[in-house]
Image (cartoon, rainbow over all chains, first blue to last red; front, side, top):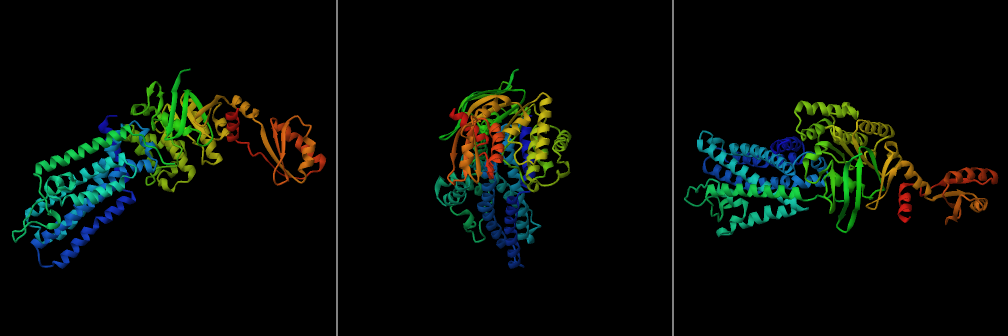
Length: 262
Length: 308
């Protein structure tokens, strides 16, 4: 069996499996939160549209970018290898004619697609509910696609990083929480190039920058002290982060011996 | 006969705990039983030969090929783990389909093989039930099915009979023997001698990470027979009973338990002792409340062999 075919088979099995787990149900429900918020905002903003709706859309993006995709990637990414070890099901995978990197890549691909599906449904509903009065504006759709693309890249980068953590550490979720909600949140408010040591910096650099009507800066919550990297560089950096951490995770999974706790 | 699985000077430790100590073993075609008490190192050995762990020292090969990080070798190996673990949210059918896809078969062949394996373990009627809802015996059988579904030449079964009812055990023993008849290699572990005895006459005794003895069942039985058995007899008058046995040559040692009612006898000739006991009890009119053999188990045999 070729490596690509092995990845495909692992992907197929775990994508199928992933759709049934309680974890997926919980996170799918969590994804309804911004949809509920969008409905509430629509009711409050009844009759008004334009800038206010756009502002709230950006607030929604904070939820997606700094919470939803991070928590999704944390739980799915760290579980790629750790779940197999904790549930002792690893023996069903490593005693098959599958190269170990194919197991990691196939599972990551399955998790990433599941997460992207949840994020896409949640973003689509909340975004278009929020901007229901602007559906005739072509810009609305372009911005939506850009948001979706940024979240997709974010899912890949975070999942790769957390998969790496899961392959290396026994209690990866704790370190992951500190990274995802500590480091990533704090460092972006540092001026200068320090913020470039976070994934979220590159994601935010790809967001559309929209000055407020008064000529001020964009939404402070989202862009506070952001010194954006050029979009092409940001995409490149996110790609490098994803590839590097996936390669590391595969290498560690291949070399490391996972022992079950008695 | 050429060795199918070869372990050379295999050692494995978990931190300070020794799992396996300088084990060299050649496993040939047919059924080989790996016998030892819990924690003896059987599962460690099986994990090493199935590439789930790498040895700290030594080398394992299957048909001359290394196992660790060599996925091709698993095309011909079926492994049934000891632990009762599964992807619980799938049905038996989906479980087998998913795992069979890992061998690169076309979907039609995957279905065909899964159906055949389910049929072999008598789970066809329950194939669409979630594994979560399977009974212990059914779970054991689906675990066996995933090990044989790809038709492997080598079958490695870690405690496959545990949790099965007598009928289930008999069926599985028959299946394993059928495997042997097809010229395949089976390595099966157990801590219960009669289970291994029912499967094969070729046994490897493992204890505290070492191979204690290997040979056929009669040889192992001989070792067990050489082991002095302890027999406790709880009666109305243990001292009168002891007096009757003092001159008996089959008795090596007699003591009285703390309760004052139990005579503990140590003998090499258990059957002979039981034969005499019936007569003595009837003759003297002693009322026997309980007869037990506290060390009539594998652990005691191992302890005896280690001590020897």
